[in-house]
Image (cartoon, rainbow, N blue to C red; front, side, top):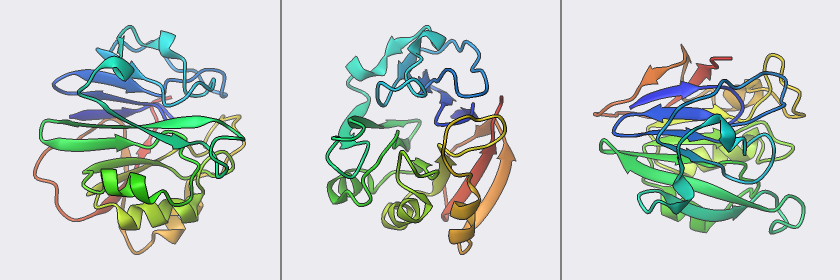
Amino acid sequence: MIISYFGHSCFVLKGEYSICIDPYKNIGYDLPEIKTDYYFCSHNHYDHNAYQKSMGKNALYDDKFTKIKTFHDEEKGKLRGENLVLSFKTEGIKFTHLGDLGESENLDLIEKIKDTDVLFIPVGGNYTINYKQALKYVEKINAKIIIPMHYKFGKSTVDIDGVENFLHEASNFTIEKKDSPIKIELPLTGKKIIVLKAEV
């Protein structure tokens, strides 16, 4: 599977099929039009729902993708609404994208995704879990590869923190910084954090 990172929470995965997750608009840098088989928007906010950028079908209606309802805040969605976690297995690898998860500890979610191989997790705080809360999820989920997302960099206009605090807190993990795209394939061993340089 080839993973491309376009900043914020937007990834394009290409393998057996292709999917664009959480395409955005108006966040300080531009997302190019991306042709994929599927798209998925974790929630209906402008920085996650620019589905027009992908010409594909909505993964929301395809059963090979598991959608798990969570909340965008600590008050059962009263502040920012619901959030859908996306989980799917392809090429023998299970991928989970947490979207804008805002719950500091959702034990039911952890149980459902603890066998994830590749975890995309927000770390920038303010609108989502912060870096300390993110690390607690990382410690309880058995992912082999953790890819931080939803953090501020470059020309981003979204009021969130950068990735630095998360990396400092996670200093006991193996941390690799790589250019996007990367190739993920079996076997996956150990547990490491991969910080991707966005293609924008």
